[in-house]
Amino acid sequence: MRTRSARIVTLGVLLATAIIGSGCATPAVPAHPAVSPPRPVSGPRPDAGPLPGQPGSLLSATFVSPSQGWLLVSIRCGPASCLHLEHTTDAGRRWMAVTSPELGRPAWSGRIFAIQFADSRDGWAYGSGPLLATHDGGRTWQAAALPGHGRPGAGVQALGVLDGTVEVLVAEGRNPSDEGPSRLYASDVSRDSWHPVPAVGADGARGSFASADGVGYAAFPEESATATGTTATGLALYRSRDGRTWARLPGPPCPGTPAAATSTVLYLVCVDGAAAGSTGKLVYRSADGGRTWQRVAHAPFGGDLDGVAASPDTLLVSWGGGDAGIYVSLDGGEHWATAYTGHIPDAIADMVMTTATRGYAIDSGSVLLTTRDAGRHWAAVRAPGGREPSGAAVRRGSRGHTRISPARSSPPPPPA
Image (cartoon, rainbow, N blue to C red):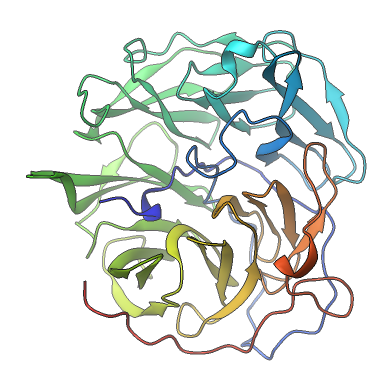
């Protein structure tokens, strides 16, 4: 089942983006109490256009404080393309190149398309190639000796940081049909000493992470063989407070994509019916950390389900198919509005809520977007390797920010 609900998800720790935001008027929505910042729940997809490694494209972003962050960019280096790292210490107003011969090797282009930092020194770059680690802020990198990562087709499918521990979901490449099985490995963030996490993984290669307020979730679709391939029949969901030990939760109602809003509030968005270029997006909510679930509503039908992100103040669903965009719900998934409509190619390659109200996204047209009002409005930010949205590709308000349409209920999709 090819749905963008199976997007690769990163969860990084202490990310807090405060790049340029919006001051536009917004529709009336329920007030929310003050909350502590959540961890991000979304991240880059390798199949989101432009192709990983295409020169001049933004691939991934990561922030470790309101002011300090990095961008992974693909640039032209002679006849080939290379990876390039940019660093900001003033919330994205200025970017400085981080020279790194190891990261810039042409061999990594198209094989590494995501980056994650845990703090100002420790970070990782990953994809279908090796897992690269840095412990000096990105100046030097070396390949991590990661078990189960040496076969053709093997790769890191997702990476997360929780309580000083970094976890990676490795597709081991033993099954030629799906590059599985997938296994979870962990290490302290400051040194590369990897070990498998017992009894956490799946037969297939897919999986995702989500986290908020010091609690992490790992999800693995359970798949069954069919005459035409495999189909997801369930979801194995695990929970952890330290990244070292994980407990399996009861089976969720459908094999969807989880997004953590707080340590106990978790959302699940599943594909429910499909038509050309669109999928149904059924939303469930858990108030007890994934133990029980309540059906909420459908997100809008338009576009293929691409990714999910959440904070205490918002639930976001990104879509692709034709163009790309972001739907927002400010009342826990009951009502929805279109917050951003983007470009062709057709995906939001990265979408992260970093606090209750702040977040960022990367349009597949290589546009870096930020929000400061819980996803109601999105502003394009000038970034190395990126570009401003053009013409009518973005609906803009009077101050140059995306204008949200009135909140509306979404009807259920047609049957599959």
